[in-house]
Amino acid sequence: MGRIKKAIEDSINLKEKLLTKETILDISVIVGECISALNRGNAIYWCGNGGSAADAQHLAAELSGRFYYDRPPLHSEALHCNTSYITAVANDYSYDKIYSRLIDGIGKPGDILFGLSTSGKSLNIINAFNTAIELKMITIGLTGKTPEFPFKLGCEHIIQVPSDDTPRIQEAHMLIGHIICQLIEEEMYPQEK
Image 1 (tube, rainbow, N blue to C red):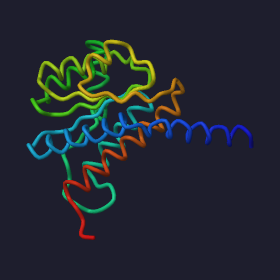
Image 2: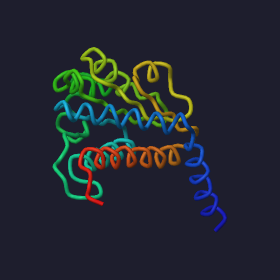
Image 3: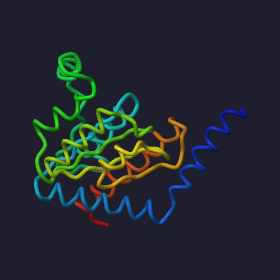
Image 4: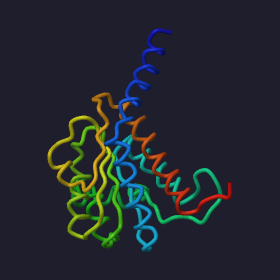
């Protein structure tokens, strides 16, 4: 019972640390960037590795499908869903190129690329950010407390969750991602009250 209670308390404590003006402002700015991009006809792309890939796919689906209510779909995709592509590029080039090569093929100026990396060390995401910057895309990183310098450098916007605990960081990324999706949905397709 003690370990369960501690895990829940640790999650709550970390989420309370996100209640800063800076984090709230960062989320607000990111939502504005996403809405502007979607209104221009641009896309939102998501990438991550392991659990962060699953989170990226989940968040892409919240926008392309629906979140709280029925409304038109939004152009939002997770980059890792084509396993034939991923395994071919990883085999023929390198795993470090799986996202950058795809962004090079489909990215357009004004598109948005979200990269989720709890460590901020994911070279495939760093490379994708570099390619996205060359294409004049907007880059947004969700990471932990101490990302590598190249990761931070590749982000036009970054939210650093103040933790080194991977599961707690991922939980915070989902909270932040859900807030972003909720606000995009509400602002683009407001409901009658």
